[in-house]
Length: 124
Image (cartoon, rainbow, N blue to C red):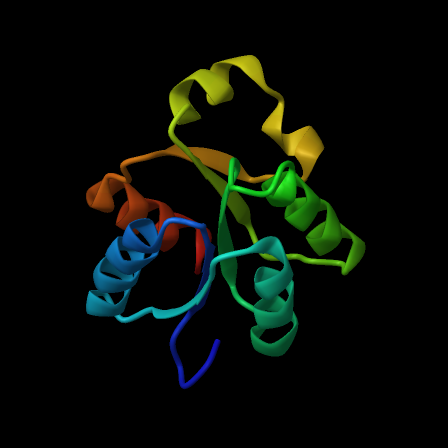
């Protein structure tokens, strides 16, 4: 938490996704830190210690989303980590995301009602 608000780290190489997350989350009293690459995401993570993380699975750099999640686990991350993916529903059915160190998968485009409900459940 920062200034009494939960901190969410959003990592995606698509600036439109980051901006839409920022608008929805900040309007609902969350602080949003963003990053557009795994490397930048790790820097932001280390400096901000977020309460929850959203990470794009398929960014421009090959395996950068997966590598980012592995790095978080190596750093002892305890915050829930959700993957954002355009194949989210299919990934949920075909993958044991918990073995990757993930809490769950969210389908892009992100349903803001579902997103806010998820945050209320996970951040207590």
